[in-house]
Image (cartoon, rainbow, N blue to C red; front, side, top):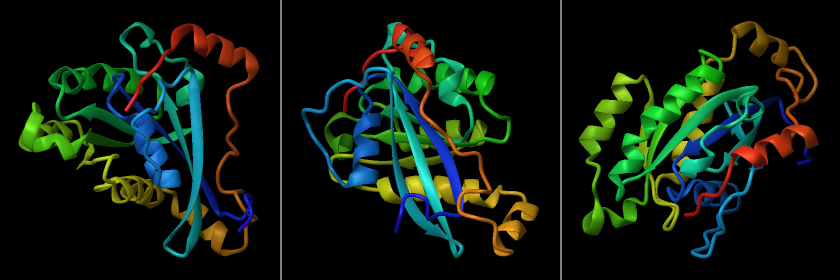
Length: 216
């Protein structure tokens, strides 16, 4: 399948504190890879993966950025065009869960009101030895904030695929019926969504000034 052989292009962003495993989740989902030596994300990175949903080819474009405390101001270019967001915290670090409030507030300031939201508690492989955030507390927060919820492990791949796919399926469900009908009538590949591009050099430069790293 070629890069242009798709019906819909959906952009999802991954946000959250540094060290919650955002980059590792992205790598696990798109390449089925995991590295304990994953380096901090500098600026913005994104990866793509194509999947079938309801008889259509969906091209998932997933953007990952820094989550370090001192680099929390994310430029509007990062959120532009996003139809979904994964808010990631580390189940062994309560502060990363408490800081979801900040990320959710920022997201709602910059993103579309109809964006699909998912709360993701990563590092579930450490649940027995180091859990600081209960499943019930996370579920309650997600429900109150109208978010989907999953616990995942980028290390052993638990729930990673299903979390991402569920997010994209929910995004697909929100596609206006008129757009879906256009696709069935033979709209060209990718014509149902705006073709997304990485930030321009100018936006990238501004992004690097305000962003930093986040490891697994």
